[in-house]
Length: 296
Image (cartoon, rainbow, N blue to C red; front, side, top):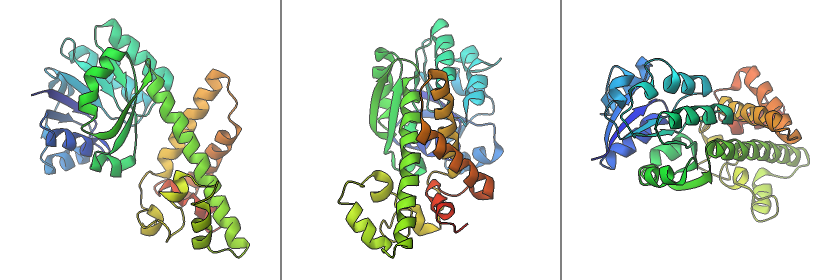
């Protein structure tokens, strides 16, 4: 039975860890937050009090952490994963972080003999719970093939993007597209309302026309057309506006480092920053239609 150390048992990490348990893996979890530990214990997950105990004999160590600084500390800090992981353990970071940190941590791991993958996900909490996530994976092909059977227990698609850091690159490019598309869909519904066109009719037409996109047909920001969308449950997330803002900022950071112009990405980042500053960061990211339609 494959032994897995799972670090980070928050809204995404806990259901992912539970799915690994359901698949028959021996999972040992760790989180610094008391509330996360309590939820994990209530879910029946085996917990340890110290990080070193979670990773010491694990064949695979998986992390799902908030941001780059936490990833850097957990892997590279004194008493962290690189100090305590078993020889030749596969390290998999599923956090969404900046490409530069992902590559730095990967290089440090490689220099100490650890194969590593950056494997951020798309699909949100619902995807984590349903084991239907998409994994965008960066790292060596051999490490990818070793990790794929385990990642497949948590997702519907596991795609090798290329060498170290390309998983993170794929995630921030994808979510920059998503943020821009959601704003465009919100603007279209706001304009339709101003012109006397019903939301239902715009949806019916655009869902079958060239304006069709995931933000429209799977995640419609107005109540009604897509029953499963957060717009039909008072914009409870889902994927929060704060998380979208984080990813758009990562995209802008990477664009600046690469010398690539992303004017629509920059504007989307500014709009989500305004929305978050209005105290709406905890709502689903599709709730930005409230601001665009002047209904905050």
